[in-house]
Each structure stands twice: as C-alpha cells, then as structure tokens.
Length: 255
Image 1 (cartoon, rainbow, N blue to C red):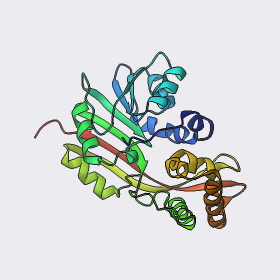
Image 2 (cartoon, one colour):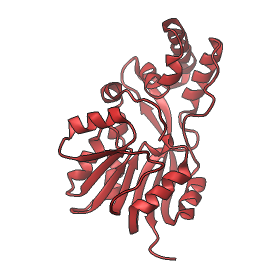
Image 3 (cartoon, helix red, strand yellow):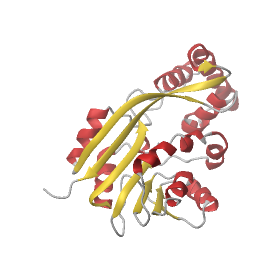
Image 4 (cartoon, rainbow, N blue to C red):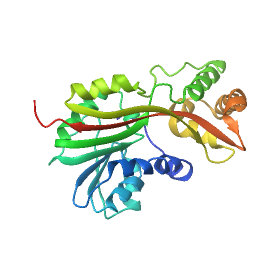
C-alpha cells in the first residue's frame, strides 16, 4: 500500500460508510465456520469482526499502524498484522481473501495480485470491491483546479488505482485466477454532515492540504464546495461520485 499516514480518528468519526457499504460484500463471500479468511486492507477492523461472526478464522492485514491500533482496540480478540498489501507473505494458505475499499490504494496492482495468489490455497476464492475507472472524478478534478488557483502544483502522481473491469480481470487471470465476475457500477455515496466534503478531502487527500497554510487550505476547500455544489449537494448533504469495481475470482487448481 502507499506510505501515506491515515487519521484513524477522522476515519472512525466521519467515514463509517466505507464499512457499511462493504457489508453486502460479506454476503457474497459467504464465509463458513472454520475457514481461514484474510481481510486485506482491514482498516479499523469492523468488517473483519463481521467475518469472524460467521465462525471463520479471520486475520486482518493493513499497512497503516494507526488503523491497526484502532482495530486492535476495537476488537482485541482478533488477529491483525501489519504488512504492505503489495508485498506480503503468509505462514499458511487461506481459503478466501476479502478486500473492501483497499485495492485502489495499491498502485502496484500486479504485486498485490501476485501476493493474493500466493496467499490462497488452490481453489481458494477472492471477493473484492474497490474504486473502478472514473471513481471520484468530479471530486478530484475540483480539488486539482482549486490547488492550481492558489498556486500549488497538482499532486505529481494520481493517488489511486482505478481500473476498468476488463483490465483488472486480465491482470488477475495472468496471476492464475479464474475471474467469475467483474462488475463496474456507479454508487453515489452520501457524506456525513455539512462538512462531509471537507472531511472527505481531509481524509483522502490530506497530504496535499497539509502543504498549505491555514488560509490556503480554506481557500481550496471553499473553492471545491463552490464548484461541486451544483452537482454534488443533494437533499441537504454532499454526495461523492463513487464508481466501484466488484470482483469474484477463484485461484486455479492446476495448469
């Protein structure tokens, strides 16, 4: 995963929708009692616990120390490990890998897919959902324009990996997976409160904001709100233009 620093308190307070929207993915995973499941990019552990509630033996993996401290505080009975999702090893193969809203933070998608393949037993399954092509395009374009208006350079590298379904399916197939389904779909996502847009930027593009003084940050965020209000302010709250990619795959059992 990237080496960015996460604000776990802000994540818990204002971004609970990330876990809530992943709950349906657990139904698709259908974890069974006794199965070994890896929650890749587990964050603060809420979905890890829901998987454990099925009776599965689940391990949460995340690269961020602050997120893992919060996960261990939330669920001290569960096992959490710190590792880079693009370069990790496991002691014993898992029956399934689950990943929600994490793979788009791993720009080395081939590395992540290779690690997932090595971490699964033959025939093991992968159920994942993350940002697909076009995800948060309006929010990101507004942010870049606002940065330019205060004389700041746009971030040198797009901070996420948002693939098309066909491209990601081909990537998984090259690592030995059989892709059973890959669906890209829009999911307009309400953000919490009147400051929801500002909190979203602080959470997910906060490193760019930290380069500015307090006045610069306010000018950028004010400009984003002005530009996005006609399209992203609906029924009394901000709406993020999310587009998701949901993938179900199985590791091939032989040549």
